Image 1 (cartoon, rainbow, N blue to C red):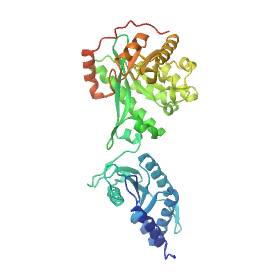
Image 2 (cartoon, rainbow, N blue to C red; image 1 turned 45 degrees about the vertical axis):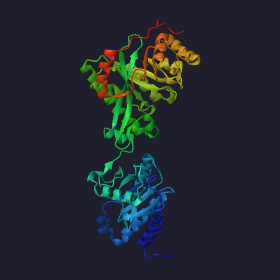
Image 3 (cartoon, rainbow, N blue to C red; image 1 turned 180 degrees about the vertical axis):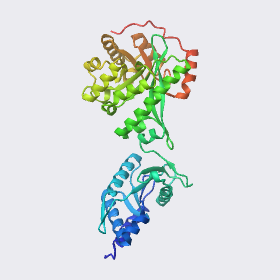
Image 4 (cartoon, rainbow, N blue to C red; image 1 turned 120 degrees about the vertical axis):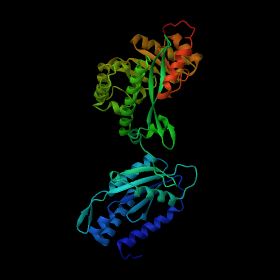
Length: 435
């Protein structure tokens, strides 16, 4: 078939692909709309023929960039729609950014070089009901028309809504942190000798505008380096704010523990930034506990990780080695970095009061910690019997559902009041050292 112009070729090709849209349900699709900004100005400078050539180049570049199962068509003048075969908004955002980067390259048109500005929206159908693809497209077009000048050239993720309201849905933890949707939940840590609440571990929650409260299991697997950095900044700020509030309220809570990813520990400026934040908030450095996952890899295998941990330890921060017994830590690592406490993984804690195999593992870890002069904390303690056994064997601290579930900041006051009023008696067992 012969085409009279690039526009006819472009329209026919996209029209053929467009007919495929009607064969697919929208539940397992995300609609991406990309808009060529300044269309009127470009038309005045390039003319109809030049604009047609630009459209043809843009469309061919899109077709060459998308995956075989994704489809492209035209929704309006200067607006391209791509139906992405995925339910993952993170994957969809990465595809959208790749397409945007490809399309915003320089184009030779009619003897001049053009660098387009491309804005875009990703429309998700998060509801239970079936939504036609054309409805997703209409929702996306409404949103594109509402872009503010500062949003031009950006990709936004929105939830489908047929009322005309536009709800921005962050696709990454970095975006969620910027919109204050990351919330610290706190789980108490109890001293086995005194029964006092000596600290809290801060655990990240994402208060998602559509999906509700998400735990790290829901969002951690897809996190990028920038997400880890944003999450740590948000959680550190909330941890330090919590210590200030607890002091003002008179609670004698000594520490707060912050989980830190390996990617953060690889940042040469990480330790100095943490110490600076502590000093800026007027909080003693020994009140912040940095938790390092043993299972993430050998913590002494990277020079930058080694330098950061040494700087934090020498600077006065406390170091916890989390999930001990499941990863790569060596005795030399415990000694070299000045680890203050090891956290016994819940895999060894469950049924430790009655399972001889569990008891042997727990006793071995406690005996080793005693000889190294390192404190211990058992996590995942879910029953009073487990708590009693661990206290008897000489474990320093416990944490888990047997004491309390993680709670938002607003509930800590009530927890502390109730715990001090109704604090259970210490396990009626004579504490003895392991080994």
